Length: 474
Image (cartoon, rainbow, N blue to C red; front, top):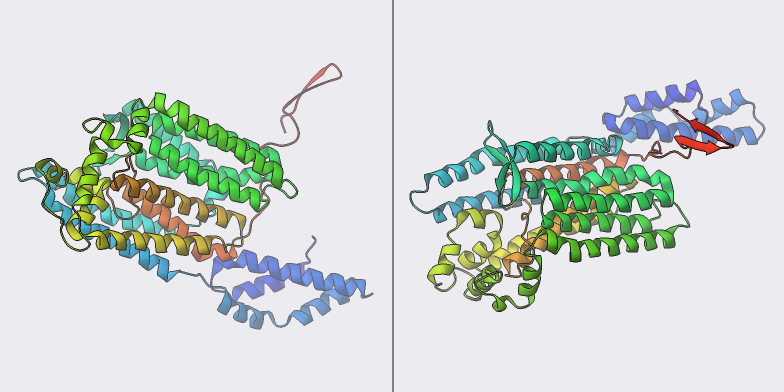
């Protein structure tokens, strides 16, 4: 569409009146499109090009007045309610972690120092990550979709070479900060990394959708090898929901919905096969956990030990206040601050403060997710919806893994309870993801999807025809 210089100048004059600079490209595009449409209408009525252009500008009105009016409507939408919920959960997590200090055995100065470091170093860092990501332009992940996957790959390479073995995983230590980066927590970034690539592949239609399914399987294998099975499950849930919504909304082309859904089902079947057959061999305790989830008493001193103990602890809990007396073994589990701080925070809350306390925490998380999904589905841009849904699905998967584990349904070790459980790395990443999510809600109104350059063009790099080998470098 050809736009005259006069229309460009008019749009620039309008944008000068709008203080929110991020809205300028979208507003300028809308103004120029409207002026062009009006000009074409006058041309169709028989006016000359110069007269049609002049009439279109006159009809639009004074650019300063138009810009002043648009300035009142084009403003960032901070979403104070969701910001308040995140901060409330964050503060509540800090309070709970402070309460957990009393469970540290006397004389364990090293763990006490570590807990203090979490409270006074990593809490401020996590809050800074939230604020930083909140003001970051979320479109970065769409414009540069390879950056995050490459960073994750680089992390894993360095961790494999220089990481410390802990629990069968390679943890990367940053000595200056005293931070040991958990591979379980890092796995929460993989859905967002996949999202950027998935968005770029939409220009390829069905082929792009199929390539996305292959990428999803590759991501799963990589997560299974370098990270944890919990990370695999979180990724499968997030990427699967994203691919299903993409097929339903025809983001990969119209009239392909049935085919895309069939491709999605094929990818799901492949992933189920991966989870059922590959994982138990990769993680040798897989079958034992699968058995003890149904019959935890079948191996009460082995794979079903923790499930049995957690269920016994919960059976002693009351509605409000501290539960009934426990055996020495169960009481010891509730004094293991390192375990409670990360994996079994809800069990601790339920026993010491009652079912109501843990219920309030779960309710706050449910309200946050409900508001988030409602806002995400209203995003006008495809990429805004993709990013927000991906992050919300990541949070949902974390919660769906965490709650059953705390109820004694211990099939897969949880990663974290968003904003509440520590793991310093998990808290840092969850707060950063929340910042990106709220960045979408704050500025997504003015984001406009652009047709991406295809990752795979129709022309082939190497072609053989008529007995000739042709190599195309452009």
